[in-house]
Image (tube, rainbow over all chains, first blue to last red; front, side, top):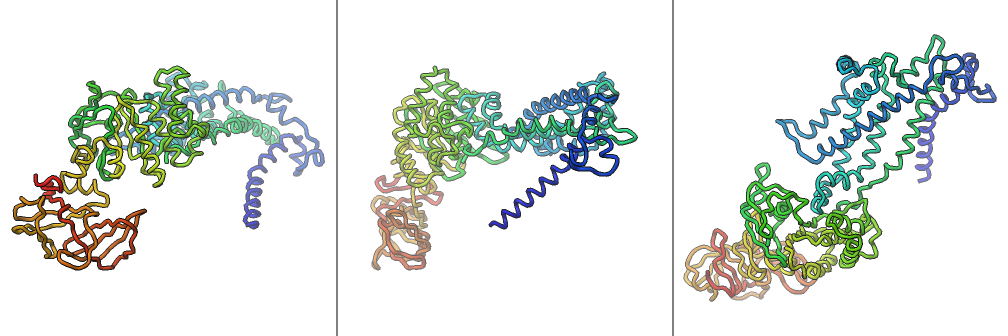
Length: 280
Length: 359
């Protein structure tokens, strides 16, 4: 028993170190002066090097640097959260339909439609980039936030639908019927009975959508030309002949901070809406 | 008055409701009885509007409600699984359906209090369904269905998932809960004849989506239309033995014979099925008219012993009052009370019954 607990603790600690160490390393590096990186490895601030803000100044356009990460951050926030929100709304409605109603067209049934959605993600982005480029050009949406939001939705919707159908399937259909018998029409049933129970599903799907959207690099790279720059694209452009590790580290930390804040903010909804006691 | 006219429902080649017609008067409890899969649940779902009809129509208070959507039908249903809103407290669960009735806040609160009190859950009103026992959860579902005071109340084997004691207790409470609802129709589905006899004003015996017999409980019990109905309304099931009538004798499969009982006096010569209730087959010591068989299975309930016996005349079920020490494999001598026999033709239709004589 004790051995088991020790083993569990050991592996938890080991895994945490594995996950946290790169972050810690990036955080420390972001405060290093160039000399502390370029002339042999240093680890401990104040002892082995004196921390300074060169890297952090660089990402905000200070110290002669040409890049300021604040406008890209704004773009990323608008595009990611905009696309995630629209995907969640559309995806929730779609998956509710796929979970509750039976569709049939020849041999195509509900599971096939769900698979069709997720199969969109199997294709490598490069395959889609050309049609997307033409479509956005014809719509006059190249190098715009709206254009990137549209493209992002196309990528996020399959994930949202795929995740949410399972969550909806977990809510007994009898609850819908019960509420209808109690005088609620199908729209009220969806809004007042089922959606409140979907908090964990919405949270998971929302987190995935935001993470995928936030880190998307390829489409913003090929579908924009400098008017709209997102964080991943801006960070890559920080690189130079001599790799500025301190600046890149600061940028990395800066780029994940909003995600961490978002995750902490919505994490508590994961436990909401437990289904125990619905049907026995 | 609820009127069902020639309802038909089939899904993917399987018939769920087969030309079902029925009239239910308000203020009464109608019990649908039949085995699992007989179509009881389908019928209730069709009445509620949850199962679309292939043909037929439903009238309530003279209005055709066949195409009225579920949420406008004013029908309440209690399922055999307890269904409650898991994210709402007991009180909120009972209140939720009332929000659609246009009641004032006070009226609503008053009604919730009344029904929580009726099902004995007042002290648990702040809990979530998951914090209650199975019986209490079913009561929440019951209170929610009752509180709406719907014109059509349907209960689909509401006691099935509960333990024996609780079932007995709730069964008694049901009579009280449903009585005094003069303008609503109550439909109750069950597989248990005890429950059906106790609650039903009228029984509807169902099989394969059809109503095999409709009538007052005593009538159905005493004159089951055919062997199938006789089996469903007898617990333990009625013994059916193939016999031949020759002259004034009934000849059993074993070769034993008995006089044709007076109530079956006009039975002509030929082959028949004899139906005997479990309490009308009694253990006896060897003698004339006594047969014997091997006990295959012994079932002891609270106050009686049920024996499943294989004899040369056929398979029999005996019910003896009290608890007795029989064991499987033992040989048992028994006597059939032919004066209490039912007789069916080879197609299963009732020809004669005790107290009725011949048809």
